[in-house]
Length: 107
Length: 126
Image 1: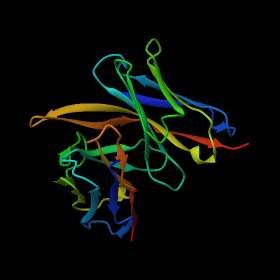
Image 2: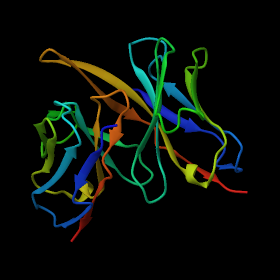
Image 3: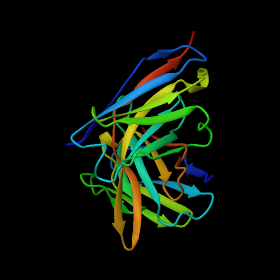
Protein backbone atom coordinates (compact mmCIF):
# COMPACT_ATOMS: atom_id res chain seq x y z
CA UNK A 1 0.00 0.00 0.00
CA UNK A 2 1.09 3.56 -0.68
CA UNK A 3 1.06 5.73 2.44
CA UNK A 4 0.40 9.44 2.11
CA UNK A 5 1.64 11.78 4.81
CA UNK A 6 0.53 15.40 5.02
CA UNK A 7 2.03 18.21 7.03
CA UNK A 8 1.12 20.08 9.01
CA UNK A 9 -1.98 18.39 10.41
CA UNK A 10 -3.36 21.80 11.34
CA UNK A 11 -2.47 25.34 10.47
CA UNK A 12 -3.59 28.76 11.67
CA UNK A 13 -3.37 31.62 9.21
CA UNK A 14 -4.85 35.04 8.48
CA UNK A 15 -6.76 36.42 5.53
CA UNK A 16 -4.29 37.32 2.80
CA UNK A 17 -1.58 34.94 3.98
CA UNK A 18 0.26 32.60 1.64
CA UNK A 19 -0.12 29.02 2.83
CA UNK A 20 1.64 25.83 1.79
CA UNK A 21 0.60 22.27 2.64
CA UNK A 22 2.89 19.36 1.89
CA UNK A 23 2.14 15.76 1.02
CA UNK A 24 4.67 12.95 0.85
CA UNK A 25 4.15 9.52 -0.68
CA UNK A 26 5.83 6.39 0.66
CA UNK A 27 6.98 5.56 -2.88
CA UNK A 28 7.16 7.39 -6.17
CA UNK A 29 3.75 8.15 -7.62
CA UNK A 30 4.93 10.26 -10.55
CA UNK A 31 2.29 13.02 -10.87
CA UNK A 32 -0.69 10.91 -9.80
CA UNK A 33 -1.65 13.26 -6.99
CA UNK A 34 -4.92 15.07 -6.38
CA UNK A 35 -5.96 17.67 -3.80
CA UNK A 36 -9.42 18.08 -2.29
CA UNK A 37 -11.11 20.62 -0.01
CA UNK A 38 -13.62 19.45 2.59
CA UNK A 39 -16.10 21.56 4.52
CA UNK A 40 -18.65 20.16 6.99
CA UNK A 41 -21.98 19.37 5.38
CA UNK A 42 -20.77 20.08 1.87
CA UNK A 43 -19.63 17.90 -0.99
CA UNK A 44 -15.85 17.55 -1.16
CA UNK A 45 -14.31 19.70 -3.88
CA UNK A 46 -11.55 18.73 -6.27
CA UNK A 47 -8.95 21.50 -6.44
CA UNK A 48 -5.93 20.08 -8.25
CA UNK A 49 -5.41 16.90 -10.28
CA UNK A 50 -2.29 15.42 -11.84
CA UNK A 51 -0.24 17.27 -9.19
CA UNK A 52 -0.47 20.69 -10.82
CA UNK A 53 -3.56 20.95 -13.04
CA UNK A 54 -6.18 23.35 -11.74
CA UNK A 55 -9.71 21.93 -11.83
CA UNK A 56 -12.16 24.01 -13.83
CA UNK A 57 -13.83 26.69 -11.72
CA UNK A 58 -11.23 26.63 -8.95
CA UNK A 59 -9.72 30.06 -8.18
CA UNK A 60 -6.21 30.64 -9.49
CA UNK A 61 -4.92 31.38 -5.98
CA UNK A 62 -4.76 27.59 -5.59
CA UNK A 63 -1.77 25.86 -7.15
CA UNK A 64 -0.08 22.48 -6.88
CA UNK A 65 3.42 21.29 -7.58
CA UNK A 66 5.69 18.30 -7.20
CA UNK A 67 6.32 14.86 -8.62
CA UNK A 68 7.71 11.58 -7.42
CA UNK A 69 7.20 11.54 -3.66
CA UNK A 70 6.93 15.20 -2.62
CA UNK A 71 4.06 17.52 -3.39
CA UNK A 72 2.71 20.88 -2.27
CA UNK A 73 -0.58 22.72 -2.34
CA UNK A 74 -0.24 26.49 -2.15
CA UNK A 75 -2.92 29.10 -1.54
CA UNK A 76 -1.40 32.41 -2.58
CA UNK A 77 -3.70 34.74 -0.65
CA UNK A 78 -6.13 33.20 1.82
CA UNK A 79 -9.77 34.13 1.51
CA UNK A 80 -12.47 33.57 4.16
CA UNK A 81 -13.98 30.70 2.18
CA UNK A 82 -10.66 28.81 2.14
CA UNK A 83 -10.81 27.81 5.80
CA UNK A 84 -11.44 24.09 5.50
CA UNK A 85 -9.66 20.75 5.64
CA UNK A 86 -7.45 19.72 2.73
CA UNK A 87 -6.56 16.20 1.64
CA UNK A 88 -4.11 14.82 -0.86
CA UNK A 89 -4.89 11.54 -2.65
CA UNK A 90 -2.77 9.30 -4.82
CA UNK A 91 -4.21 7.64 -7.91
CA UNK A 92 -1.01 5.85 -8.91
CA UNK A 93 -2.16 2.48 -7.61
CA UNK A 94 -5.58 0.88 -7.93
CA UNK A 95 -5.89 1.12 -4.17
CA UNK A 96 -6.31 4.84 -3.75
CA UNK A 97 -5.17 6.40 -0.50
CA UNK A 98 -5.50 9.78 1.14
CA UNK A 99 -3.33 11.85 3.41
CA UNK A 100 -4.59 12.35 6.95
CA UNK A 101 -5.74 15.89 6.18
CA UNK A 102 -4.67 19.42 7.05
CA UNK A 103 -7.15 21.61 8.90
CA UNK A 104 -6.75 25.26 8.00
CA UNK A 105 -8.07 27.58 10.68
CA UNK A 106 -8.40 31.30 11.10
CA UNK A 107 -5.75 32.92 13.26
CA UNK B 1 -24.73 19.49 -14.30
CA UNK B 2 -23.87 16.15 -12.74
CA UNK B 3 -25.12 15.61 -9.21
CA UNK B 4 -24.76 12.70 -6.81
CA UNK B 5 -26.98 12.03 -3.79
CA UNK B 6 -26.40 9.41 -1.12
CA UNK B 7 -29.33 7.79 0.65
CA UNK B 8 -29.92 5.03 3.17
CA UNK B 9 -30.50 4.30 6.86
CA UNK B 10 -28.69 6.57 9.27
CA UNK B 11 -28.58 3.90 11.98
CA UNK B 12 -27.46 0.30 11.61
CA UNK B 13 -27.14 -2.31 14.34
CA UNK B 14 -23.85 -4.08 14.96
CA UNK B 15 -23.33 -7.26 12.90
CA UNK B 16 -25.93 -6.16 10.37
CA UNK B 17 -25.39 -4.98 6.79
CA UNK B 18 -25.04 -1.31 5.92
CA UNK B 19 -26.74 -0.47 2.61
CA UNK B 20 -26.41 2.86 0.82
CA UNK B 21 -27.46 4.07 -2.61
CA UNK B 22 -26.02 6.86 -4.73
CA UNK B 23 -28.42 8.39 -7.23
CA UNK B 24 -26.78 10.07 -10.19
CA UNK B 25 -28.41 12.85 -12.20
CA UNK B 26 -27.06 14.63 -15.24
CA UNK B 27 -24.95 11.68 -16.37
CA UNK B 28 -25.41 7.98 -17.08
CA UNK B 29 -23.51 5.47 -14.97
CA UNK B 30 -23.50 3.01 -17.88
CA UNK B 31 -21.76 5.26 -20.37
CA UNK B 32 -18.84 7.64 -20.55
CA UNK B 33 -16.02 5.50 -19.21
CA UNK B 34 -16.27 6.76 -15.64
CA UNK B 35 -15.68 4.98 -12.37
CA UNK B 36 -18.23 5.40 -9.58
CA UNK B 37 -16.70 5.40 -6.11
CA UNK B 38 -17.42 5.16 -2.40
CA UNK B 39 -15.30 6.97 0.21
CA UNK B 40 -15.92 7.34 3.94
CA UNK B 41 -14.78 9.56 6.78
CA UNK B 42 -15.02 8.24 10.33
CA UNK B 43 -15.74 10.91 12.91
CA UNK B 44 -12.59 12.86 13.71
CA UNK B 45 -10.56 10.96 11.15
CA UNK B 46 -9.46 11.30 7.56
CA UNK B 47 -10.86 10.00 4.31
CA UNK B 48 -10.79 6.28 3.60
CA UNK B 49 -11.23 4.83 0.12
CA UNK B 50 -13.77 1.97 -0.05
CA UNK B 51 -14.00 0.97 -3.70
CA UNK B 52 -15.49 1.61 -7.13
CA UNK B 53 -17.51 0.22 -9.99
CA UNK B 54 -16.77 0.87 -13.63
CA UNK B 55 -19.25 1.57 -16.40
CA UNK B 56 -18.73 -2.06 -17.49
CA UNK B 57 -19.74 -3.28 -14.05
CA UNK B 58 -16.28 -4.41 -12.94
CA UNK B 59 -15.30 -3.51 -9.37
CA UNK B 60 -12.25 -2.77 -7.22
CA UNK B 61 -12.24 -2.79 -3.42
CA UNK B 62 -9.93 -1.70 -0.66
CA UNK B 63 -8.17 -4.84 0.65
CA UNK B 64 -8.97 -3.84 4.22
CA UNK B 65 -12.71 -3.97 3.47
CA UNK B 66 -12.84 -6.40 0.56
CA UNK B 67 -14.19 -9.34 2.56
CA UNK B 68 -17.21 -7.31 3.67
CA UNK B 69 -17.99 -4.89 0.84
CA UNK B 70 -20.02 -5.16 -2.34
CA UNK B 71 -20.57 -2.34 -4.83
CA UNK B 72 -23.24 -2.87 -7.46
CA UNK B 73 -25.23 -0.80 -9.93
CA UNK B 74 -28.81 -0.39 -11.12
CA UNK B 75 -28.57 1.10 -14.58
CA UNK B 76 -32.34 1.37 -15.00
CA UNK B 77 -32.49 3.80 -12.08
CA UNK B 78 -29.04 5.31 -12.69
CA UNK B 79 -27.86 4.34 -9.22
CA UNK B 80 -24.98 2.49 -7.67
CA UNK B 81 -24.94 0.97 -4.22
CA UNK B 82 -22.71 0.01 -1.34
CA UNK B 83 -23.24 -2.93 0.97
CA UNK B 84 -20.97 -3.43 3.96
CA UNK B 85 -21.63 -6.53 6.02
CA UNK B 86 -20.93 -7.41 9.65
CA UNK B 87 -20.62 -3.78 10.70
CA UNK B 88 -19.14 -2.61 13.97
CA UNK B 89 -18.83 0.78 15.65
CA UNK B 90 -15.66 1.31 13.62
CA UNK B 91 -17.82 1.59 10.50
CA UNK B 92 -19.58 4.66 11.87
CA UNK B 93 -18.74 7.40 9.38
CA UNK B 94 -19.88 9.88 6.79
CA UNK B 95 -20.16 7.97 3.53
CA UNK B 96 -19.60 9.76 0.22
CA UNK B 97 -20.18 8.68 -3.35
CA UNK B 98 -18.09 10.24 -6.10
CA UNK B 99 -17.57 10.13 -9.85
CA UNK B 100 -14.05 9.48 -11.07
CA UNK B 101 -13.02 11.06 -14.33
CA UNK B 102 -10.03 10.39 -16.56
CA UNK B 103 -7.88 12.88 -18.45
CA UNK B 104 -5.12 12.24 -20.94
CA UNK B 105 -2.24 14.63 -20.30
CA UNK B 106 1.23 14.59 -21.85
CA UNK B 107 1.04 10.92 -22.71
CA UNK B 108 -0.49 9.63 -19.49
CA UNK B 109 -3.98 8.98 -18.15
CA UNK B 110 -4.80 10.68 -14.86
CA UNK B 111 -7.67 9.76 -12.55
CA UNK B 112 -9.45 12.02 -10.10
CA UNK B 113 -12.81 12.26 -8.32
CA UNK B 114 -14.39 15.41 -9.67
CA UNK B 115 -18.03 15.19 -8.57
CA UNK B 116 -19.06 14.19 -5.06
CA UNK B 117 -22.24 13.83 -3.09
CA UNK B 118 -22.66 15.75 0.15
CA UNK B 119 -22.32 12.59 2.18
CA UNK B 120 -24.60 10.70 4.52
CA UNK B 121 -23.89 9.87 8.15
CA UNK B 122 -24.21 6.26 9.21
CA UNK B 123 -24.02 5.34 12.88
CA UNK B 124 -23.53 1.74 13.98
CA UNK B 125 -25.14 1.26 17.36
CA UNK B 126 -27.57 -1.04 19.11
